[in-house]
Amino acid sequence: MKNDEGVATVWTAIVIAALIGLAAAGGWLAAAVAARHRVEAAADLGALAAASHAADGPARACDRAREVADHEGAVVTACTWRERDALVEVRAGSPPIPGLPAPSARARAGPVGLPD
Image (spheres, one colour):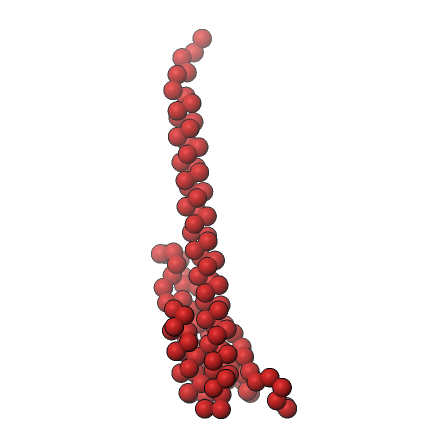
């Protein structure tokens, strides 16, 4: 008969370490997804802000998009116009997980109901 005293303790420690690792990976994934959603919202809001200030000129409209994105914790990397549509690209101010790139997003908004 073999002496296997303490084997359950070793297996329990291995299982606990694996569960802690899975919980940490889940937390990192949740942080990355939340950051991506925040950046997408900042892009949408920035494009809407630019489109709503289109009558003030492209420069002022893009300034407004930058203000809105900054308030949302994002940085506007590009603000351009195609016909009457504002095209806004943003990225997160800092990556949610060190070592990974900061998420980015783009959005497009323009006037509604105007004749072509």
